[in-house]
Length: 240
Image (cartoon, rainbow, N blue to C red; front, side):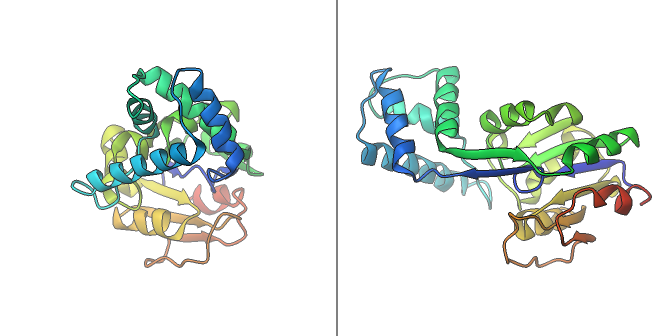
């Protein structure tokens, strides 16, 4: 029987659409930075942002197969590139502004809250393991009323590596002293979620939502919910 239910966030629990390529997003960010004496043109700002991300990935490959960016460090670099300094808290604030500018919508998938409540009533422990930026995801989970259901979380931006790297899964197990045979991972992505969990020798339920691509996993998931109905989880898993 599974005691620990580990969830992906975006595309699994949360339906989100962002567009970091819209001109208006970058114009708003440029105007925000100008209040701090950090002056960019839109093309220069966009180039600095993405080149900083690429640099972090390049450096991260020296240690991990799937390195992750920390967007707070990206925004500190954006300041430093103009000979300005930003504290961690300021860089986080600007990063969150950027997130707000680029988000078209963020909402909870139908059935998520009821499913989490049912799992908690059954005495299960719930965890988050997500390729996500902590400074974005924790506030969004809180705002949407989901964070309170979870016993713990690991976000890739804090770890420097991302799913499907088994290192990320192992860090969650180690941090919360979990037995992998008592865990199941729930996610929507064939590669990062299904293959990632199986590489880490953790059972997986593949929840095929509107965010699931046509890619197929290398490994067969233990369970599949093809219609994306998360309320199927208790029926499938509570007696396992």
